Structures are given as structure tokens and as C-alpha cells.
Length: 128
Image 1 (tube, helix red, strand yellow):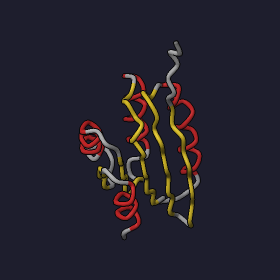
Image 2 (spheres, one colour):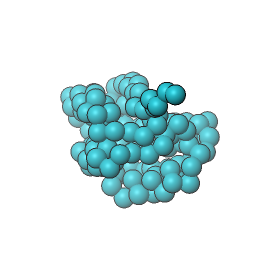
Image 3 (spheres, rainbow, N blue to C red):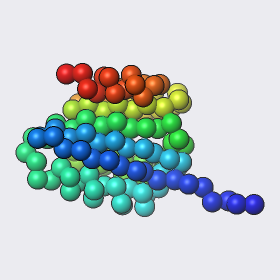
């Protein structure tokens, strides 16, 4: 019997002038080690840009939650880039993910919304 479970974050970052588009896909239950890898990538991408305008698309359809320390890492990442995030769209299928989107909106200056469909999330992100 195989007891290994896949987990982690994949990231894509695109920059057009001072506007960044970050696509994240969360799989399984995220760990502190996952954030040890992803946080420096995001920090590095945003470090040299004055007044970045970041739009984030988070695919949470395969996410099962966080370990406690990973949840803290996620919170710290949001706080460290608070003013950088213009819009964050989270799409998934679980009620708790909708609640997470509401809580996240308390800690970032931009808008955070939850969607059940990727197309709706993209439409909202791209709408100025």
C-alpha cells in the first residue's frame, strides 16, 4: 500500500511593465517546506519593482489545507507583500476555501474573491 501523498505549490510568474500576474496551484496539504521554496521566488520577482501591481490566480481545486506552520508562512507572505497585491482570485470547490478568501481580504490591501469556476476568476482578474 502506497502511503505517499502529493503536495506542494507550483507557480508561474509573468511581468508586463509593472504589472505582475502570478498563477499558483496548490496540491494536497501544504507544508512549511513548500513555503520555504515558493516564498523566495515571489520575493525575488517583486523585489526590484517599484509599486508593483500584482494579480494572483490561485487554483485550490486540489488543495486539502495547510499544516499549522505552513498556514503561518502563508499569513507572513501575505503581510510582507500586502500593498503589492491588487487582486487575488481563488477558485476551488470547498466551503472552507471561500472562508479563507474572506479572511485573507482582511490582511491584504487589494481585493480577494473566491470563485467556483476558473473562467469567472480570470474574467474578474483581467477586468480593470
